[in-house]
Image (cartoon, rainbow, N blue to C red; front, side, top):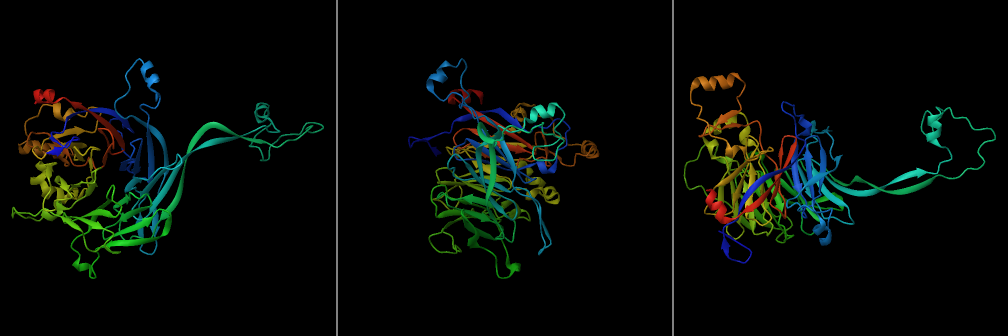
Length: 503
């Protein structure tokens, strides 16, 4: 059971999820360009801004707009309609963060795809964030600047243009002819700063040449001065203001690469303890390290690992045990991890086993061989926790995502689809399972090799997957990416008596 605010144990409130917004919705049959597919999502700590990165190396920023028009109570009382109770966002700006590169020493192409985006502390009204591709981390500053205009010119460009006398910009050779006697007087143009503003992104630092392998994680420290970047074998510690030097704090590379048994898959700083961080491995373990112990943290302070007591190991056991993502709870007490089949919630005070395990898509277990052949078994799904740590969420196939209550007594999930009708998967009538060989052959002839059917006959498409999603830090709202579309949903608490009557 999860302890509620008054210290007593209680059941997390049931949530009713509803569609809020969509950005970049594609029309039916519209082909999605590879560069437009979203590859990273992140809310800032205040929940006022949202950032996404895509495979084309672009970062897109959104800002929250609900409740900003009427900030005073008397203004809200004058409104003839209720204020929005859920976050609403609008497009703010976008910029090209990374470009495709080529490493001539290693004859290696470096994609521009954004792997992670992380918000930093704001200062002087400016936004700061980190973005990374496979090799390079960049530190961006996005600030509003007033637009400057030049006026009080000696030449009235509008009048000259109307007379057909001006064919180019001022300062460029034109067919303008001075009037007889010239101008009676000349004066300097005046630069006027108007009231209009424009968001200007500027790259402040570039942290490069520190990783031999692909960067899979970046994480800000709570001290506001440092961050980490992690690849398959190493974790480096950076100072935000120093781009030409980093400190290697974790190194799991063996002397002989043939002895390599596991790699780092994800890493994250503790939300409040600046000396503590956690990283996961491909063996399904999570290590908590304390940077105060030594400069090179080759020994962990805690090891979170669930022992397999079933004894039924197979070729796929280690593959599906690999952790693809970890997230600290906002209180710093829990860690949420996602492997291929499950979500696991760990208590920092209990290393032997998770306090809760949630089955994400158990129906896939008989299909692991097929998933291995088409490489779907290596998909990296992300996970997230609500701000109150009472709910967790993660993605699945067919653009579905699942939301669980953090109550050890229940393993029921709310399954939603990334569409304007998120409850469609729950309200549809289950069809009969497709069992006949003729039906299977017919589906393959139609090019539906990626379609599979669960026990209820519901088809799942492994070519569409919900890999990236983020939970709003202060509200029950989710942002998730389906190809090039960004969907936002919000939830309302259902009274316990009503929720019980609906079951």
